[in-house]
Image 1 (tube, chains in turn red, orange):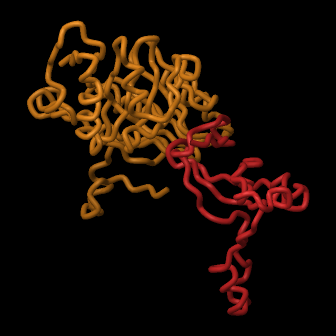
Image 2: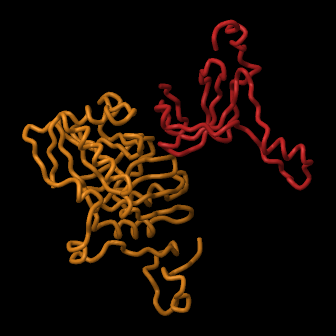
Image 3: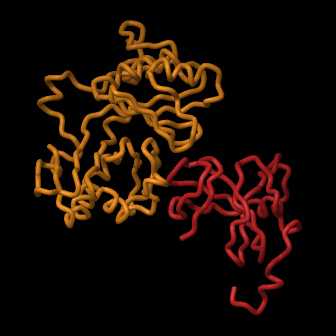
Length: 108
Length: 233
């Protein structure tokens, strides 16, 4: 079982207490009326599915019941950082050397 | 927040004629607890049917339902001026601002941190309305106090083997090093959820929802069977 750091509770808690809620930092178009169908469809339905560093929205469902963000590596499952709503990640795909290059050929 | 003063939406015309218990916050509150006579006659706690007095002799587990306590949930922003002071004035206990901590006093009152903007207050049942009113008097601005006494109950778990039963039931680390006295957290427990708190060296309290009480009570009895059970009526 994994332990996940909740930035609101300030400590590591059991994975069972959390739920993932999909990609983080999705911004609703400021003026939906002015969107093209493609833009609106992209906002509603299309999500990144990277092999590598991914920013996700999680909720501490059995706990403080707050949403927060996790930067997670989708290949190694490593949680690189957790941060509160409204904050920006310090680790991104650009800042983090991609370990998948080393991991190639290894069962991931 | 609306300034509704009546509990009966049909009785709009009677608002002025029959003012309810009003406080400075313009929130209507009623005493949910029946009179002592009615309470003594009719009240049935969520575990009354299950936790009947029992003593296996040399029991490793002691269970007791702390029935009919006053449960209040409080929400608000602790950074708001006067919020923490108001809670302390109304309750007689400092507002816990450290995550997963619990403040309690000799009078059976306690307040537990649940979230950066939410706390659980437990008081003796007959004080629930007094405390609820006092909080409304003392607080202003954006806050919320809800009396949830009817929806929850408390199970006291103690005895030499109490930790063994918890370890069977929850992934939360209950080792004394990780779970000192004064710590309280919501927890996954036997696939249900509850609030687990350690109120003294020897005693844990489980705050359970009424709808989970039967299931969790049976789970606890089953999990405790091997250690011998004493149930205080």
